[in-house]
Length: 319
Image (cartoon, rainbow, N blue to C red):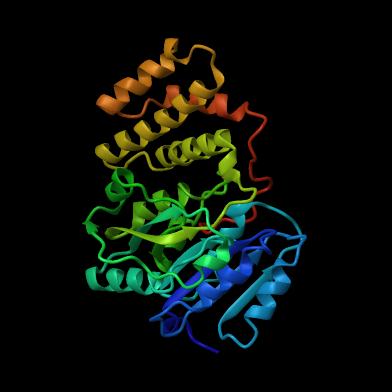
């Protein structure tokens, strides 16, 4: 059995009915280059297909494998937090069970984190439209550009740090509380919450996540994406009222933008609304958060009946 200090990267994968993708996803995951002693944590959210059986078969004999078979379905954010709580590595790299990592991508992210002594490293993702089998042996395209942010939060707010393309120091991720379980999809909340506590961040313009041909995921529900994006920034503002002025303004700008997208999709004449004026003003010169306006916006999102929300949050890393 390895000790915590032996493990360089803990991979945390949430799983729900992805039997078609998993053989290719796992081939690329288990083939990650340049790692001394990785850990693989799989959190199943009560899949009804052969996902767990595939994972067990393909990881047989692989060291540092943890497979958690949950007996109820809770959603992505609680399950990814369940995985983070078990992570023993120096860094965590999270992934969806239908995303494929280029074989050298984790090595690149880890080398950059250590070289620059930062807590977060991010890359890009691309929707390839290809069958997963065609992506199993891909490498990171080089050369690529690197940008170092001494202020991790401003780095996240000025960049596009989404779609699970990140490597985050485990201690920072746990201190941040992982994903916000008040938000169903974790893409926005994880980098935002971690960046509050992180020492520095790096963004590279290479694709470190390859998205195969998509079959049935939440990206098709644009209102879900708008809701979760707004909630991630709303709760970040409410939970951290003493963050620096610039960060608060940028978070407010993003929350207003998410609300404007909701209005644009649901109102007959969206350009005649106060939401459009507020959006324009904050696009030009971001204002300091107005909590009364934010609460009005939140009420509109809360009234939506076609978005998924976490029922009975499982557990909090902060507790």
